[in-house]
Length: 153
Image 1 (cartoon, rainbow, N blue to C red):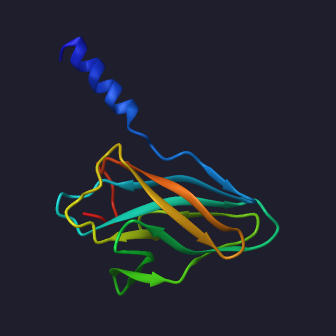
Image 2: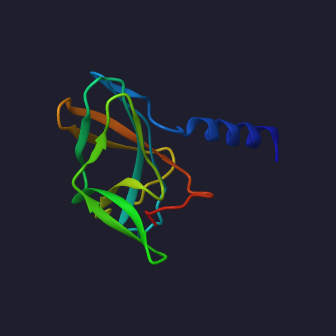
C-alpha cells in the first residue's frame, strides 16, 4: 500500500464516528448512540445507546421518533433456546442508574428502510421521548458491522 493510500485509509477510519456526541437533558445523559451498517436491501436497522440518570427520580424512555415508517423499542428475549424480538412500550431508567440498549437486549428498531441502507459514517437523526424530562434530539452514528451481532441486515 502506498503512503498516500495508507494515509487516506487512516483518515477515513478516523473520520467514521464511533458514536454520536453525548446529549444531556436535565439529569439524563444519552451517550454512545450508534447503529450498525445494514445490507443493501435490509428492511430494518437497529440502534443502540446508553441512558444515564444522574437524578433522584426514576425516568422512562417512552418512544423514539425518526424519519422511517415505523420506529419501535424492542427487547431480544430467549425462550426454549430461541431468540426473538418483542415490542416494548418503553424502558425504565431508575434514579442514579445507567441503562444500556445493546445487541442482545433492548434496542431501537428502525423499520421500512426502503432500499436506503445504513452506511458507515452516516448519522441517523432521532428524537427520544421521556416520561418526565420531555424530548431530546440525538444522532445515531453508523458503524461498520464487522464482528457485530444483533439486527439490521
